[in-house]
Image (cartoon, rainbow, N blue to C red):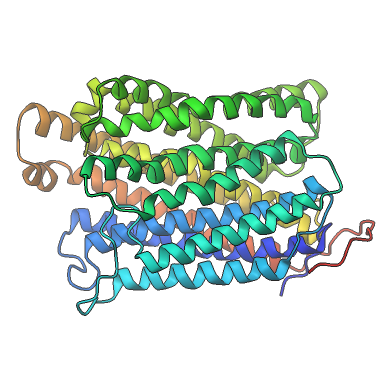
Amino acid sequence: MPDLTPKYQSQRVSYWFFLVASLLFVLQVVDGIIIAAQYIWPQLLMYLYPFNVGGEVHLNLLVFWLVLGFMGIVYYLVPEETGQEIWSTRLAYIQLGLLVLTGVAVLVGFIVPRYGLTWTEGREYIEAPRWADWLIAIGAVLFVVNVGLTVLRRIKPITATLGVLLTGIIGLAVVYLFGMRFFSNLTVDQFFWWWVVHLWVEGTWELIAAGVMAFILMRLTGVDRAVVEKWLYVEVALVLFTGILGTGHHYYWIGTPAYWLWVGGFFSAMEPVPIVLMVYDTLRYVRERRTEITNQVALHWTVGGVITHFFGAGVWGFSITLPQVNYWTHGTQLTPSHGHLAFFGAYATLVLMSIYTFLPEMRGLQRFGQRRGLTAFWVINVGMVGMVLMMAAAGIVQVYLERMLGIDHTTVVNQYLNFWLFWRLVFGVVMVAGVLIYLWDFFALALGTRAPVARPTEQRPAVA
């Protein structure tokens, strides 16, 4: 058990969310290596762990560890913003246990033989069976209730950071419900399916990301709250356009009116703008004030996340979502190239940035050894950027050979993409190495022998 001494005792629960998220992160990237290898050697583990199963596991692990990471962040951040302990740490642990057991059961169900049972719903990205959907929804409701009751008992007034965060948290639970109903009309079903697959991720998650980013910037740099929170209002306004209207770029193929092509293609590229401006404004403030930032690992993840978010969700997204371009690129390696960099920049870096900000605080460490953490940062980013560039190159080759010259897909994949997909595998191995270094550093920070720095204690209300 790590020696945790956070300002609010209930913040200890965040460690366990971070721990599970980190372990699942490792599993996800290892699974990704297997999938990448199967592109080059299709017979690899064909009967033991086929490609379609690996893809299901990869995507669900991604969502699973990110959501648990978000929840850990919120459980640390809300006491700071409300001046109040979490309403019930017991409920938080019950919620964590429920989600972990449900997630593990779903993942095992993807892998093991079904023996005639229908374990998945067959809807891409949200394959979890209906019973698991309900358990996940219950876990999300418990989360909203726990945070909501904490806010109702608050000592401090509600800030813009907390308000945006609460809006995102409620949306996290509500929007997921749209994926729990089937419609007999395929176009209508796909219409609402995209509400979960896109609007859940690029609407409600963006609000959570904005609130967390604002808090982290204030914590790391000491920047005035007014400097960062003004961009939160811009973020909320833009989410109404980019998060909702941006969903339209997915409607290209499902028979909806043509205006969605232009609306979705344009507004999708605007999503990262407020967060980019928030970080730029903060760093300009820090430079003018000449503020010393001691936690360089968290700062690297902050700046690196903004850059990869901007290029992954903004530049990469805009380059393939305009209807004239998407007509040619849809279903090629350009799509996962965009998806990997966008998810990594927008959310994975956010969780890692938060862990490197909050975990040293929980240990009472004002200064700590950062070489290993910085090494993990650079190795992970080199691996990710390398993979993204290799997938982009493979996608361009696909567009030319398949869509323009008319060569069949199987021939193109087997004969013309192996060079690029091999190097994607190489960079994937690099990223796995970086994630393992990160996990080593995580345990070193949590369980290390560094003596915590003494700080004054405060009397807090008893925790439920």
